[in-house]
Length: 148
Image (cartoon, rainbow, N blue to C red; front, side, top):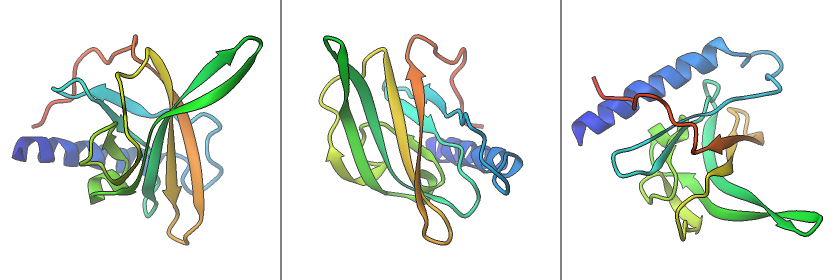
């Protein structure tokens, strides 16, 4: 358990460094890429690049559903209220109760091959915003992140 916390803390520190070196002071990049990996239990762990002072307040997993020529979006998982400072800094596990204290839409089944992740954040001044990214489970990182 202690190794897992140290590993998460190290990843959170890397996220903060990456955010600090990105465009946090100026206009945000038009394409913000999230990091992701799979933990030892097969859960998707999201590493959201967040600017210093901002906090993650919630997250969603959404898919596009085709209805003939029209399409709509369906929420597969939704959660609010970061359960720890590590989650508030952008590192969370999809579908597990230890990341967010309010599971709005629980994850009912395995995630599909591809899905959108949406993250809600709050700035130091209280301004709320959201960003999203596409995750493709066919593209898996070559080596999992390991604790020191």
